[in-house]
Image (tube, helix red, strand yellow):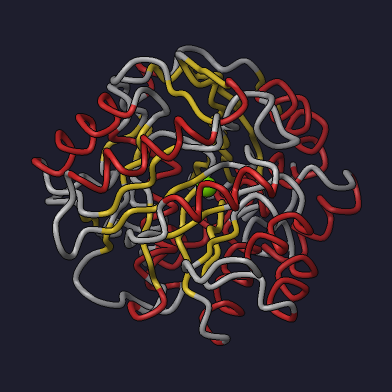
Length: 367
Ligand code: MG
């Protein structure tokens, strides 16, 4: 079997709840996603997706994803798609860094392997742990009252884990955290995610002001060193997200006891292969994980579901169902949220089929 065609689609994902806001004044009305379809001489095709959270969140952007795939695609034509590590090394040799570019291609190769051996990806990754995966709901930054109202709304439809976007003015963030905590019940989980937005002195002020509450603190500051400084001044359970970009950053953070938990974003790490590696190191070290991505539609959500469902339940904190934030479906067969949980699809590979009418025509077609 050889790869004989790579098609790339640019897809706009509207956000159902209106603009999505997070630290640093970032505001996005519609996410620019990139979906790839990798065809083979056997007639199988693999699907992948990468959707950066705008251009100012991480060192990644939608146009860069497409330019990078255009650079890599010709070298993949004629290759055996099942040699996934070999092709990963080949992509790393051809294009230094840019893990997000390779993420969609790696995802598509896993999809092909699953279809070739007629197994769902979750089985290839070792099997399902438990019946379902608990989801979190990200609450866009807004007034304290509006964020509390959003949490009420999503509690009513089954979510019990809420990641509220803070990382703004500390006094406003203190109000936001108290307002949301007021509408939660026993058993609910509250995560205050600053998305790198605070300086250490601001983070410490917020943490002192909410010290009587039950919550997690996530990625308070931009630099790892500043996060570590805050970590050492608080006894709240602590999550690192943006600072963990590869094996060496993870091992350093473990050595420093810099966190209790890590958020693993498939695109930031470079695909399913690399995310699985970091996931397994975390699990074997007692560091719980959230499995997610920067953003995405049905394709990313399916990949998240397979990785999350194959994560031992005791170390699986939560996962994201980004396909429920947008009204645009890109594939059939993707996970559908049930009472704040989802399950990995049963179909082969990612277990999904693209809805071509919703993708438009390919913006790149290499064969
Ligand atoms: Mg985060």
